[in-house]
Each structure stands twice: as C-alpha cells, then as structure tokens.
Amino acid sequence: MKILFDQGTPVPLRGHLVEHSVDTAHERGWSNLLNGDLLDALERDGYQLLITTDQNLRYQQNLTGRRFAIIVLLSTSWPRIRLRVDDIKSAVDKIVTGDYIEIPI
Image (tube, rainbow, N blue to C red; front, side):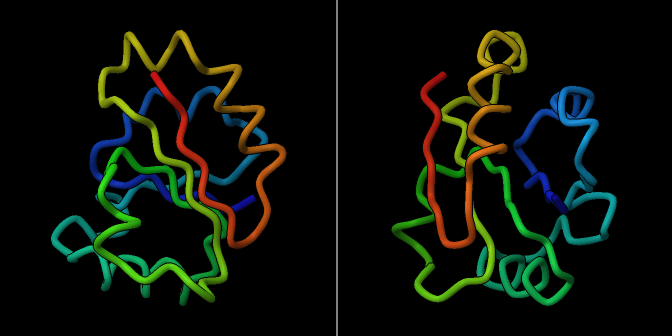
C-alpha cells in the first residue's frame, strides 16, 4: 500500500510498516500545503492511506468520495505511539478506501 505520513506523524513508525511504501509530506515537498491541498495532492499521486495526527481533519475537510483512507493517531508522542504499533499495523492491514479510523494512544 502507498502511504503518506502527515507532518505530525512520527517517522520511526515507518520502520514498522516495511511491507508498504511510505513517504512523508516533508519528503514530497508538501510540508507547507494546507489540508485541502495536501489531500488533493496525495489523492492525485495515488496514495491509498494518509496517517496523520490531525484530530480535526474530518471536521475541517469534506472527506466524502475521497479515493484514500485515513488513520488518525490520537497523539504525536513516539514513545506512546510505539506502544500501539501492533494496533496501527492491524488497522493498516484492514483499512479500505474511504475508511476513517482513529487510534487512541
């Protein structure tokens, strides 16, 4: 699966998703894009999943009809996220286009 990490997503998580292709918004040069523009860019470039820590995304953007899924990590703390890696991997393995999943951290 082609995955994009948003700005707040801890990069060390990438090492736990080795069976997927993972890029960061920073690596793509998308660090300064506003949420709507970022969603358009990732969709245009064929990303299937956005992993973000932006808990307000679903309230700020119309996600209806988008051709990707979203996982929201409810923390930006890598030490806390690391403890939930198995839950995150499970969510990634089960997620389908259009899904929106929040993972409590």
